[in-house]
Image (cartoon, rainbow, N blue to C red; front, side, top):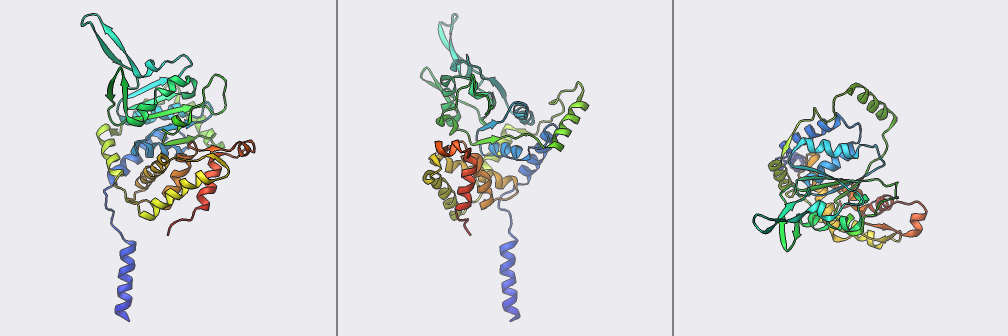
Length: 337
């Protein structure tokens, strides 16, 4: 009997005490330092900061949505300060043209040839402020570059340097003078992050910090943490995170359920399934695991799916949001064991 008990104990210990297959320690150290740097200015919003870091690790774009004054733009600037990569800010306005973003060919009188002058999109981290202020033709100029990381102009393709990440902001309330993003544009964002008002204690701390700041700038004391090479290295590492077959099927069932749900007029595409997979790997990594769990998938599902589905008109009139419907779908789909 003693031998049998010993064997059972050994088996149990083998199942519990696993060794991490990937060395995630440097990544975790950098993630924690970046969080501390951002949190010296941003009060609360821990979930948003985690999602932004996962987007970088997953090589995906982010749409920040919130009312004016909830630190959407300053957060993107803070993040850029912690990364030793190129940064470009583009303020979208109603008169902005595609060439103002992508660049244009200019005739050189000396060489008697056209030369391509690169636009501000040729950088690593792009902040697009108020993305829904520009008309549809300007928004459409981002389709190729966000999906393929290249720009085609006058028959020539220009590859953008990695890493390449777009962080766009928009105000969900004010509709006058704005142009709604088409579904094809929204589908190119890995996450849509909705930023809420701070709580009372957070609001008090924000006011206190601003009072103590005096004439010092918010970004002055932010340190640079990650280089472009380290970001690319971590992005490659994230791809090696393990995902069991039953979890792949779990992702597929969630996405397929969005297409069959009576509350949704339009469900999510296969691109959404891939986005959940990549984001779940990112969440696993910043939690120190080299394998994905159902909780990682649940955490990724709402920010990945809420902007890729369309609520039926009847449910929209009732005030039901896409995030609420997605949460119901997640609860209805059986968690793999």
